[in-house]
Length: 271
Ligand SMILES: Nc1ncnc2c1ncn2[C@@H]1O[C@H](COP(=O)(O)OP(=O)(O)OP(=O)(O)O)[C@@H](O)[C@H]1O
Ligand SMILES: [Mg+2]
Image 1 (cartoon, rainbow, N blue to C red):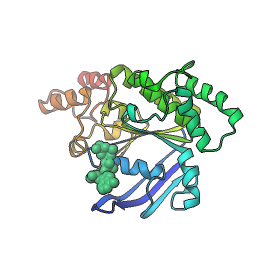
Image 2: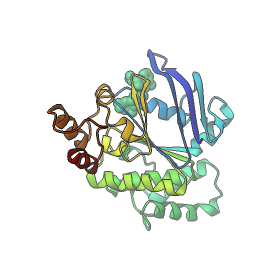
Image 3: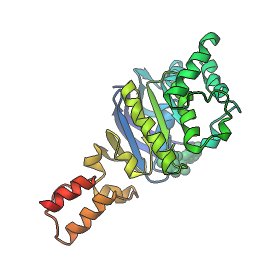
């Protein structure tokens, strides 16, 4: 297991309990979605995986390293990189290559290696030749791909996308999603925090959080069709699921597991 979180509980200095005995694990190369309403604790989990806040109760292990050991702080940050919601807040420089080099220098990569790594990571995200571009001149989708390139340059085991598509238009979202899903083939795990059920539906597994507790955890087909779970997590079902549920209420389809796809809806209607 790449990431193992066991009975993690947490509160901020001025807050009540934010995480309440949260347990989950993420395999190498797995796309793991975390969904839940505002304030349910998603970003607080992300901060633990990136060793940005200390473990108070329970355990967090990333690539075999215990997050409560201060010696593991920087190795964990490198193993598990993070991309945030606002593409305009992620850049330190007005030249794309400098933004990627900045992270590499922080982790003491040899100066002679840096240009090669910068070019490689830009091409991994489909931004070849963008070395000299000003990040602020890029589209939202390109900005987020550049932010992902800066993380990939460090050769991480996992990438956390904390609502990285929230501010993008549909095309930008598609670009970032395609890139996230392609990381799987490189054996990089993706922890995808999102409010979009259609994005979570593309993950291998989904964890639903509500008030800092795990409400459900399983494959999208198991989790994202449960009316009770979606309602409590304040998520809107996908269209095929919604159509099936209303047909079922009218007695127009035989009871079965609700579908996540239009193919599934069609099958249910034919039965
Ligand atoms: N630094 C902080 N100090 C005190 N309370 C905090 C702090 N950061 C977050 N919180 C509180 O912790 C709770 C969980 O916040 P968190 O950011 O983890 O939620 P989230 O699920 O990511 O929400 P959103 O969907 O809005 O991003 C919220 O009630 C929030 O107000
Ligand atoms: Mg958040």
